Length: 187
Image 1: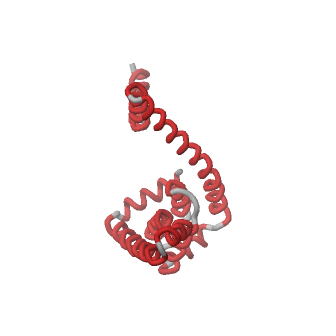
Image 2: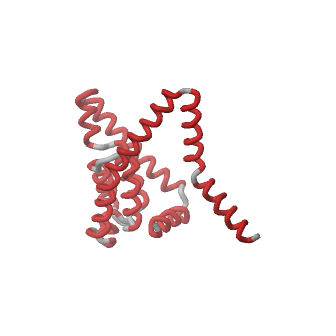
Image 3: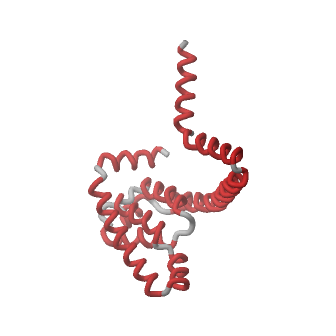
């Protein structure tokens, strides 16, 4: 009897963990049944996204490994830790701005920064910079939308990223941040 409960518990956890994936597969199946072309287009988008992920993630993980080995925890604490001040904020912006790849590639980097005890505020700055202040995006905006637009958008984004980081630092309790850092350490 206990064996069956254990299997049911594992099945329940499996379904809970992969619920979104299962629902997506069911919806994709429904698309194929009722509107084959839409199902085919959705499948092509999924395959394209998966290929893109396979091209982006391995170099990111190599860089993360190098970051983990080459830069000591003490150095990162000094540069971007609790007492880093403006230097830590500028470095977080710089790393996020020169980074390459989509936003989902930035989260493993943020995890390594957490392992290195980078200040939570600076990690939020890094993620915000990764998502909105990349140099290639800025150059494209300058050529397509004009120099003035690109600089105004960049200035507004920097301002908003700093505000968001301050708000998150205020709203997220220290013990919750500690749990996040613990999860990064254990990963």
